[in-house]
Length: 441
Image (cartoon, rainbow, N blue to C red; front, side):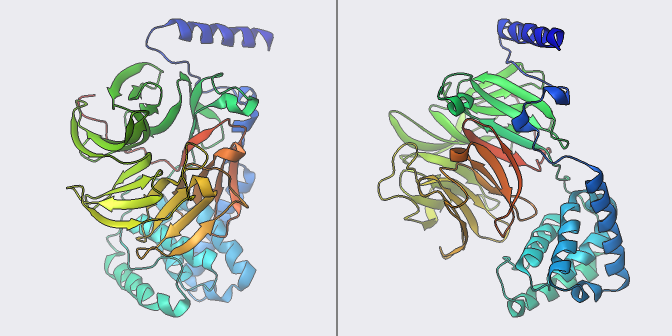
């Protein structure tokens, strides 16, 4: 063990000495993985048993469609959750059986069943018939009938063409040393954990990393606050490209045309959202905001922004004109950094918007009229940054004040967690690894 430790120290020193490289670890033996990162979604004999149970349930429902409703109360919930947990593995080879199961689950009285089923259906088909997951059974009937008709017309030709959600986790720890009272040391890191809870990549020595995206070529694009830039990091740790953005980059999105969308601010700049082309040229911007922490380009071409200093989330068209907004989403007087308003927003598949309000220790799901339909409060989170809805309806949270990352279901039960972080800013699970590589960078 001593020799292994000395060899590891030598590797780290060499990484420091090579210009243009970042320290990183890959495929570390499990006994060397820090305890905090062993809390991932391990594949065990129990997982295999659940998968076999899921297949059996799918076959039972296919033979006898009424059995889904014959399962009563807790049995129905338990059986459905077993199927839902194994959905990523079932989609590929058993997609049609899974579709039949999900369609029947839409009629279940338990919200935890029909809510998750509606999310999985939208994910698998890329179509939507109006379900938000919060309707009563009578309110669901029209949407359920539309789903059934769609399936009857398409099931013979149906092929699942999307990217499969994996169980990996990508976590940005901006200041690991905060856990021990030192914001500067050790430096920031980006950790990628695989299906088995093992570290795939562990990039070190960043000056406050804040967001990350994985490209289809295996590279990592990382916002580096102190550098006021987005860096492209090769899988071996080499710095390939630096894109200066003119301020502290708080969020990052790859667009389908290969451009970068960045939200940020600086000490002498109130706030901005800027779009850069494949050569790093500024091609679109939205200026004079106040501490915008997140920007998301929507499918309709509009841009959704979380403006943390003005307690609002708003949507603008391509000309920068507001088309939708919700105000009063924060403390009376927003301040850096613990008393900020909305620091993350996400437009959901059901048309609602998920918002993380750091200064109120609250995460809310807002419908188009601005009404809150679901929320999580200080009983579970504290000074959180990111909150993102996953493909299965669960919510992943960078629970910064509690030094952890958690995944919760619609009933706010913690179904996964990893702790021991200093200052987790962003976290992503079930990564879509089909993000296009930026042309020319």
